[in-house]
Length: 214
Image 1 (cartoon, rainbow, N blue to C red):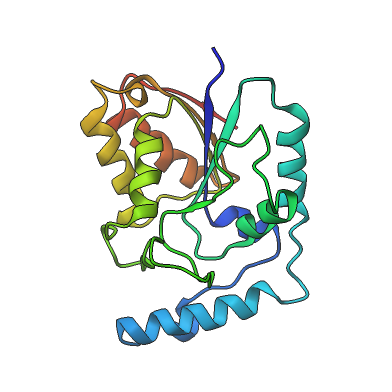
Image 2: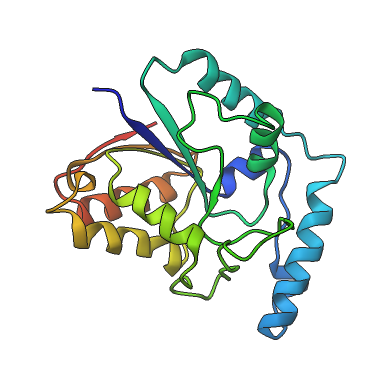
């Protein structure tokens, strides 16, 4: 029966576009507010560097538009601070939501450096050392989608930080009541270490879930 496919993107998506910026060299040894200011300024500049080419994202969105069967829709989530994916979605559908998307908003689980006219509902920036996220309207809506999800595709996500791993704690708590307990997972990652970490989380926290590694 047609439903929703939930895509969880990590840093691998940005790296595939040439965005290899890292906050550690310049922003690490600072107070929290200074670190967030540094990340915001440097990452926005890095996104506009000539080496960044969003063609992989455009190919992905074109693939969804051309290959999605009737009734199936997609939801897009990312742990990245950059907004390369949202920018390309907006370029594809600036004034409307295409039928293959459940929502044209890209949910930034760890916050974003994107500057909108109204950022009041967006998630706050989650730093590497944070183990949990602050509540926000965006996060609440994202988690509502996630706990009801039955098909997940994880792309380039390492689950290294505690906040990212905490997603499985949430799914674990509702696994006996909601579809996510028997969900299907596809993990796409060139790193065997990251694949093993994702597999271990799925098998430990969602023992009835099905997984496939690509």
